[in-house]
Amino acid sequence: MGNHAADIDAFMAALKAKNPGESEFHQAVHEVAQTIIPFLDTKPIYKDLKIFERMCEPDRTVMFRVCWQADDGAVHVNRGFRVQVNNAIGPYKGGCRFHPSVNLSVLKFLGFEQQFKNSLTGLPMGGAKGGSDFDPKGRSNAEIMRFCQAFMSELFRHIGPDVDVPAGDIGVGAKEIGYMFGQYKRLTNKFEGVLTGKGLEYGGSLIRTEATGYGAVYFLQNMLDVAGLDMDGKTVVVSGSGNVATHAAEKAHQLGGRVVTLSDSGGFVHDPDGMTQEKIDWVKELKKNGGRISEYADHFAGSTFHAKARPWHVPCDYALPCATQNEIGEEDANALIKNGVKAVSEGANMPTVDAGQKAFQAAGVLFGPAKAANAGGVAVSGMEMSQNSARVSWTDKELRNLLKTTMANIHQTCHQFGEGHGKDGGIDYVRGANIGGFVKVADAMLAFGVM
Ligand code: NDP
Ligand code: 2IT
Image (tube, rainbow, N blue to C red; front, side):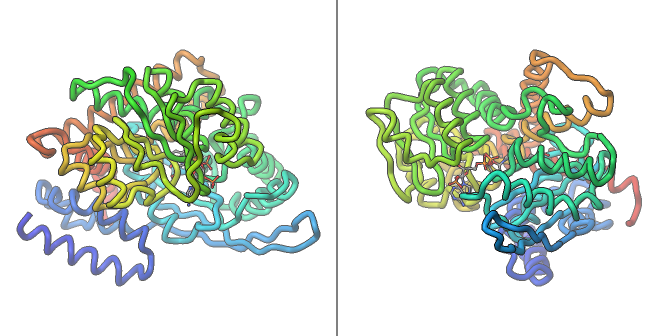
């Protein structure tokens, strides 16, 4: 890489000095910088107009107090956030995460990634992310409702169907979106497409719930097709047991894979017989009611629970990390490689550490990075926005086809920009996704001049 290594180091040193202590944000930028900084040489005006520097500085960040009362009368004070990163190609768009680990660094990393992911979908959506350090675990429905209403009581000032359209993420599903949409409607007296992931009765889209997990498996399938591999009877390891994980497991199973694991923050379950639709449905119901994945092993004979462990030492053909960031460390990646993994498709955001990504690529493992592989969710969110604007509802069949086509197009974009840069002249999907996502946003920013 020659001089580029020094350029990347200098860029990262400046970014770290300006954003101290934000390790997840540094990690996400570094991953993109490694391909974008060398690429800037192809069009010097990107460099002269500091396009990449601008993408690393959110347009604005809103932080606010969220005060709410628990069932026992205790008053709680949480922090709410919305990081609006870039609206060059469309209104800000991205999920909201409710989890005790949420802080500015985590949301800046997610918003930074989102601007490239949304560009890759081909739809007109800018990048944003939001959320709170609120922990929904163990809270009653009434408490969750009061928290969502308190959160929206400030957020509503900063969003709108042509301004910023939030959605779900960890800890935010259909129920929370319902409470937030209701509060937005009450405060503004407007029924409009301001959130996605809504219930079907009030403007939601078919296939949105399934889209992220299904999309990650379609992306896997696209990678396998190019490499002459298939799903039939292959062993698939999945982490997480939430929205993305259960739908990824479902689609992998439907396409003939043998899904042998799911996990949560307590550990993972190993079911060597493979998970059937009935078992996956059981997990969806379990999670809806606040259950723990350990209960799976009590319920289904032949399966085992492994406390405080992740599933990456279970031998598999394909791995689908669908829980959270940095869940595949370097050692985990090496264990997967040693056991013969052939492809990894990231359902979660940044689940693989940098050294793990490099290990996969050096070993010739097909590696589909999050901003490409999990873009199916936000893509169907974009379709929900279109349906809301036109006041129509598309059919299940139309949306399933659109999701499949969108994932194939994203794969094609990665192919176009990544071909010849992988091991032995193969496709470097990380490079392909980063450059493919960057170009459209960068060219829009050029059109606006210096601002
Ligand atoms: P859910 O809240 O539905 O599920 C999250 C799952 O991940 C749970 O099984 C949870 O376990 C586990 N998990 C969360 N945090 C941790 C942690 N720190 N350590 C171990 N396990 C953890 O979220 P989603 O399925 O929606 O999101 C999963 C991932 O997919 C996230 O990275 C998200 O950003 C990404 N994503 C989601 C999209 C969507 O449409 N929902 C779109 C694109 C990406 P536990 O219950 O024990 O906390
Ligand atoms: O990370 C993501 O892409 C999401 N959580 C979904 C965002 C959205 O706006 O649907």
